[in-house]
Image (cartoon, rainbow, N blue to C red):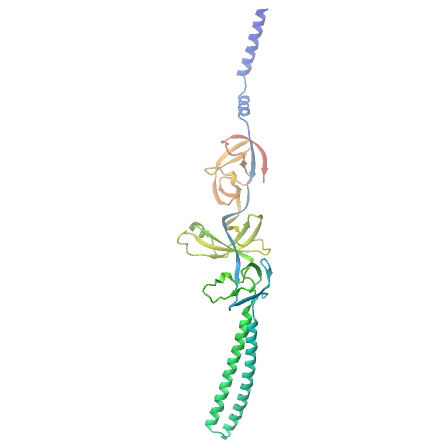
Length: 369
């Protein structure tokens, strides 16, 4: 019994040894692949499309127009008709000084003008009569000169009275503070009863009665380096975005390009203006500016994440990842142009490509077109 048992064990061991040494190379490779695993990847089908190279900056948003509403003459603030945040139209009355004294001066000037006009009419009648008598040689030159001087004096006093009336009207006009353009009242800087005197040295024009802004268009000043300024010119399209509305883009353009660099920062100042019809872009907040500096139609492009260090990519061929060197062209934050190294329609690995080696086994999970 013991002999038979030993013989059976020997036959079993011999059978397993024979099967192990008789495995085919394909079975052995398959076993190795199963032991190391197959990489799950996602691929992108290479196609031709437009690509634009862009520059991105951040700057402070400012209203395109801003003015401090200040009277041209001194006086006491009598009325303020608007509050902070109010929308106003061009020509709308915003505030006024106490005009009682000015209105009395206006009445006085009007009365003075009436007297001057009456005197001038009388002097003109006398002058016309004297001209006729002179032609008939019925008056002396002395009499004629006396009437002529009286006429010229009456004419000068009429002009003086008219100037006084114009001055009174002007003082009344400038004491009524109107909106020079349509906009929004940004701040209220004075109260009723405050005395405003813009001619005093201690008075600051920035502390006028009101501050009015128009931000239906806004401007953003940004600084660019010497390398970037060569790509920027006046009138170039620009796009503005804000963090609170990441999906909304406000079109604009470059409105100013400084030709000289700042002596301290060595950077160039440029100004971008953008439309803001809904008043979403608020002054004194930050905005992101994008400038398109170059573009190419019908370029072979792949996502940025397909490019590995050293400008290598992996192309999917069957169930293998083929490592390939490529030459790059235009780039932006999402895409990169491939100038040399791939063909249209090839499948480039964009996920699962890190850690791959040439000829690595892959399993394509998704094809993105």
